[in-house]
Image (tube, rainbow, N blue to C red; front, side, top):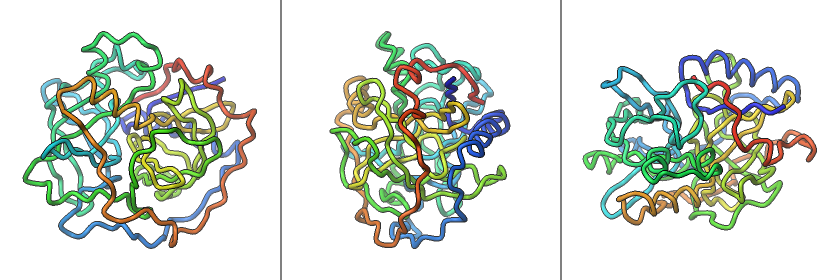
Amino acid sequence: MVFRTMTRHGRAVRRAALAAATAGLTAVGVVTLPLVAYADPAAPPVDAPVEPAIMAGVELLTPVTEVTAGSCTANFVFTSGDRVFIGSAAHCGTLGSATDLNGCTTESAPLGTPVIIRGADGTDYTGELAYSSWIAMQATGETDADLCELNDFALVAIDPADVSRVDSSVPVFGGPEGLDSDGVAPRERIYSYQNAADDNGLPVMRAKQGQNLREAAGGRSHIVSTTTPGFAGDSGSAYLDAEGRAFGLLSTIIEQDGQVFNGVTDLAMALDYAVANSDLGDVALMNGTTPFSLEDVPTEPLPDVPDESVPAPGETNPLLPVLSR
């Protein structure tokens, strides 16, 4: 049986989703490693604290409805003309209930919603929600099930006054080195930096290594395994392929028969949809200011995941409504 839940950080996700997921970790014996102590070749300068995987992520505020949407982790930096954006997941702005996981029907915080960006220097910066794939799909009357359930991408516009404080490099790994637009090979090693799940009794594992296990919906979603998996609050986190190219962002936790995987939205497809269905212009990924490098990153052992235990595309699509907040 497959259960799939969003990975934004909300009030109940912290209690229920993490409890379910950690039970799965025990069942499969996922390798547990100590606090990451890698050298950080991509540490931002003190005047550039807004970066991929910023501490505590991005929190969408919705004061009009008196609902605070979940806190998430930013992914990559994007540009369009003189505008600069940092990426998130569309579901981070949901106003729906725990079972409302369909982006074509679930209400979201509107475009223009203020966004608090918690910088690596501990300062809160303010941006605004400039694009949400969920809002875009509803505006176009989208009915394609793959899109409704797996197109999970948002862009937060950085205040022009804070653009000089932005660094585009992924912590620890550096990069990205361009956009992966031709898919990720099965069992290809992947890399992610995630900031959440550090105060819930879980090991603090931020710089993560893993593998791409299977593609779903023609490559729109990737089923991945990392040590440790991404949990609530890690939503939106950046994923790099073996060459350091940006290929995805964390969307869901998938639990199948006691094993925990992640569903990763394909970035190239999500970005194509954003360009075609918004007025943002030709949005482009910004490469990292520091090159992708594994020189100071020890190779971690990865969990043994037999092919037969990986959720099949037909099982993870459509989503089963489970826990969101």
